[in-house]
Image 1 (cartoon, rainbow, N blue to C red):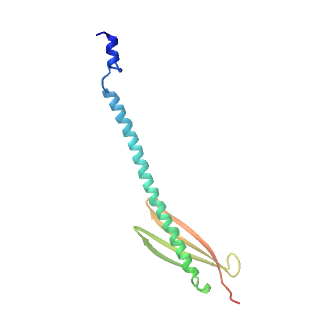
Image 2 (spheres, rainbow, N blue to C red):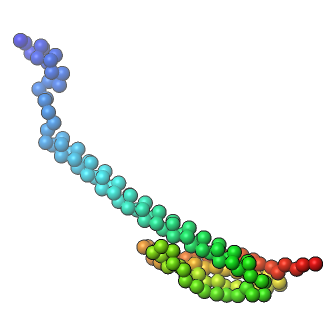
Image 3 (spheres, rainbow, N blue to C red):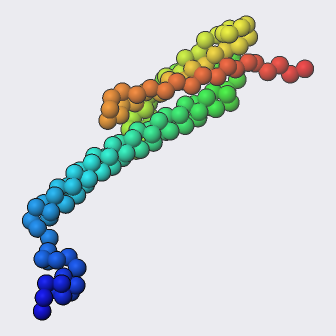
Length: 135
């Protein structure tokens, strides 16, 4: 059997396996990729948790504004309360400015504060109310 016949049987020539260097390079690339994806996933989980808390804060502010709207105009006043949703504690502070932006109107601002894993957070929602006069 000559050398040309031997090459035809083994298209890779004398190479029959994977070397140790190739294996180490492949494993190191896999490790770098897995590490990068792991930190990316942790960051996404934190952002998801933070977005959930923002959504809860806006919902609490909206609920507070709706409960204020149900009150008689003369009874709308500043208030403060604390609410717990899951593991987070939210503080709602309602501020009322009379005759703002003009006479006969009340500007109501609801500030919602809570602590996140990344520090203190705050959202504020405003509404303007007027007294309905029935004729």
